[in-house]
Structures are given as C-alpha cells and as structure tokens.
Length: 416
Ligand code: HAM
Image 1 (cartoon, rainbow, N blue to C red):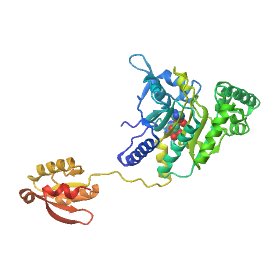
Image 2 (image 1 turned 120 degrees about the horizontal axis):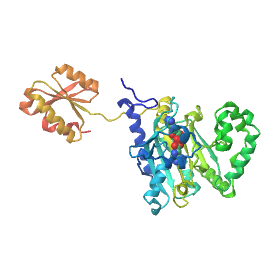
Image 3 (image 1 turned 90 degrees about the vertical axis):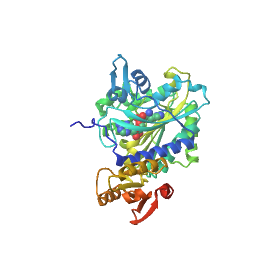
C-alpha cells in the first residue's frame, strides 16, 4: 500500500473547515488592507532561490527539492514565496504601476526538513509582499495586518518579536564586531557555529544549542550599530506600533533564516511555545529586487504557515463555523419515482438549493436514516401516488413533521 510521502499530509474533508475558514479570513483582511492576489508556479529556476535566499542558508544548502527536468533545466520546488513574487514583479514590469505594489499569496511550499509537529516537507503559506516603498509606516502596516489577522481568527496569547539588522551601509561594521566577539568564544560553540563565524555570522545569534545561546545572549546587538537612517527608520516603526497599540518585544537575537533581509525583521510566536513554533516570519528586503536585476526597490513582507495556525486554533479550542452542506435529501419509493427524484434534485440545485438523491433500492426507513446521518434539514419523499398528483411529502428532519406540497412550490419553501 502506498502512503503519503514523509512530511506531507492529505487534507481530508473534516479538516477542510479550517482551511476554508482561514482562506476566507485571508481574503477579507487582504481586501481591507488593499492587497491583490498573485499566484506563481510551484517551481522556478534553481538560481532564483540560491541568489535570493542565499548560498549559506539551511534552505539552500539542505532543504531544496532540486532536480533537472527532461529538458536539462535546473528546477527547484519553491522553498518560499518572496523570491517568486519579486521575479514576477520584474518580469511583468509591475514597477510601472503606482508604487508600492501590494500582493498576497496562498501557496504550497516545499522544504526537505526533518518532519515533526508543525514542521513538514510540504506546507502552505499565506504571504504578503509590499514592493516599491521604504516608508516605515508600511513596516507597521504589514505587522498590523498579521496581528489583526490573528485577532480575526480569535487567536490569543501571541508575542511579536522585533529587531533591525541594518542595511548595506551599517551591517558590515556590525558583522565585524560580531565576528570579533565570537572569535573569543569559539570553544563554547557547537560545530555548526564554528563554521558560521565566517560563512553566515548573523545566524550565530539564533543557534538553538544551549551553550551557543549563552554566548549569543551577551553578543553585541545590531541595533547599537545602525547607521542614522536605519536608526530613524526603526524608531519610527516602533512609534507606529505604539500608536497602533501592538505590543512588541525587542529581540536582538532575531535574525531570520533567509539572507535577503535588511532593516526590520519580525516574528510572531505563540507566547508559551517559543521560536520552534513561529507562526509568522517577515521583514524588509530592500536589496532583493536589485539583486535580481531590477532597479533599487525597497520592499517588505511576511509569510505564515497555515498548518501552524490550525494547530493553534485547535490548541486554543476556537470554534470554527461549519461549512454549508446540502439541506435536502430526496427519498423515493418505487421504480417509477427514481427519474422524478433525479429531475427534482437537478431543478433544486439549479435554484441554488443543495440536494442529495438516494441511490439503490433502500427502504424508506433506511433512506430517512441516511438523511439523518447526512444532517440535512429536509427530506423530500416521492412515492408513486405523489408523482401522479405532482406533489411530494416534505419532512422537516428536526421536528419529524411531514406535509404534502405541490412539487412546483418546493423551491420557494426550501430556499433559505
Ligand atoms: P519563513 O520564516 O521561512 O519565511 O516561513 C514563514 C512561515 O512559514 C513560518 O513562520 C512558519 O509558520 C511557516 N513554515 C516554515 N517552514 C515550515 C515547515 N517546514 N512546516 C510548516 N510550516 C513552516 C519565509 O518563507 C519568508 N518568505 C517570509 C517573508 C515574506 N519575508 C518577507 N516576505
């Protein structure tokens, strides 16, 4: 027997209620904030991701699903959504539209990770990207949008972690101070971090090994090495967050696992669980569009994992409204009535009334039991006598009351 590949899952009908609910809330919030949807292909040229996410990152080094297709092209299943949106922005000349361009996506993401609760090899992200403006009010707007999105889902007990990691101008100075500090602590570091000192020093700060965490806690903080422009930008962002009454925690160890970030970086996590179950990750990436061949174009965005949101909705026992189901079951007794039932169901559906027709030759009792199991509000019963008189019996399944009505009046009686 085949099974789903490790780290992936089937989303069965009973789970779909969460997915539809979240999709609807995503569409609502994006409309409120003026974001338009974009969909990109599930795979891209590998170079797009190595270039943008960065050679030294876990994603590029260990987690990409990369292969040569039959034409010999190097292809990668998208391991994140920002680079494809930037590629589309450049490819379709979206810089010619009024800036900033505000886009969102719901997309499957592929990462070859070690599967565990909340970590999969295929997951889905809701992501937003605002391209073409560096105003810190947009940083605040993007964070506010993620925050209000969780409020619309009634998710509580979340914590917003915030940092600024500077820009091309000020980051090199900070990195050299950071490297000098770490050079004095190499003995305490895990083998991975020893390599990171030269390859990707920022990532030293978010190592999960206890001994490395101690070193990281006392490390120099990027916010103390920001150039005046980055400092002003960060101060204004913090001012806007206070204005919007969004509580945040400054976390100087927050650096993110993708190389394209500049200035603002942020994450939203469940208060209790910490970084392993981060719901949202995002930040500014002011150099990425240029890196991919465009003009200098600042941008900011975030993405959140849908499966992790669902885990938290369940953990917090949040009620999700059930999905609409057909309200009518059509039972029929006698061979002559089947055609009538099939025709009636089709007519009701065309009038916008969801209907299910009994199949086979079950007894009326069995058919009503089926109607009950399906949870329909009404059963319509068609017998041979009724066919002759162009009537049906209409049974209210909640009260078990039954009456005879003309078939032509059914749609009017059943419409909600
Ligand atoms: P990321 O932090 O790698 O950022 O992923 C965003 C979110 O996707 C995470 O916070 C988490 O909820 C979810 N996620 C990531 N990996 C997995 C996994 N293996 N299984 C389940 N859920 C996962 C990005 O991808 C950036 N593109 C975000 C961004 C957009 N930055 C700017 N714009």
